[in-house]
Image (cartoon, rainbow, N blue to C red; front, top):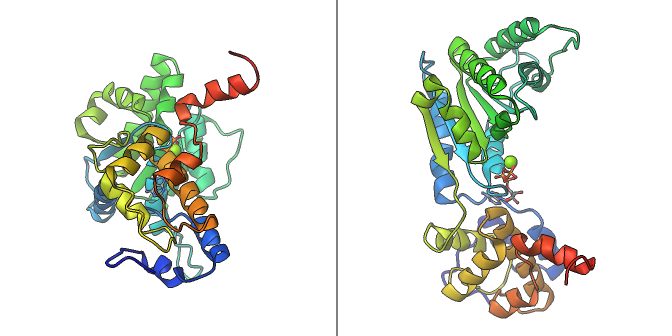
Length: 303
Ligand SMILES: Nc1ncnc2c1ncn2[C@@H]1O[C@H](COP(=O)(O)OP(=O)(O)OP(=O)(O)O)[C@@H](O)[C@H]1O
Ligand SMILES: [Mg+2]
């Protein structure tokens, strides 16, 4: 029986009485969990999209540790605004575009990624200035407003002069076509942006720090619980469960979601239909920070 006043998403509500097999299958489709900062960043990104073109386009940096939801957040935004390639329209429109920062700050690869994303033919023998003008013409033609650049910290894998030259490229693209830049990356990306005075002046920093007992983890766990097809309430935000989840996950959302889903699967399989401390302890979850040591131990590298 369901506990009174339990909050479930409509999708989960619809299948809560279904067989364990159906519910185990449903667990695999982890939905996007809209936690507080994610909502605020998403709202800000939507604002950029409807804002008038400006000679001072915004640059936004979403920074945080690995596995902490940066790419998922921008992917969701991109998914909400897919390119419109209606064959009856005169040209495709793509208001938002996602590219990955090349492994080194190489403008050729950067422009090539933009062209590839827009399915434009790229002449591999083209010189940089040709790629640049082709890419800039195209972003104007499709009406691009927001360019998302993931893995922006890769900028640091170049020499200082290359880094500076790449920042010039970013600034040029943004100013020339009045495009808002949204970078995602590890915290080291902040240093890169700060080293360019003009970008630094107008860039907004949105950190996604690791989850702790003080920064909204309770709300995150409550929302996450509403996505679990379990027949009884678990109350994941209770202190004893929350502290276990934080300790075993190392505080990243990717690991928190994986751990909670593994616990939910176990609770369906063993018939408990709720996650409690014993279900979590029974998983024998190794925190990410200890995994290398555990692997080495299992291979007999250490004693
Ligand atoms: N809002 C969310 N709702 C549900 N699951 C999420 C959410 N954000 C992240 N996750 C989970 O965390 C995993 C890691 O997220 P993501 O790939 O966005 O991390 P990242 O910060 O981009 O890491 P990296 O720096 O390594 O690229 C995702 O695959 C997903 O399972
Ligand atoms: Mg990522």
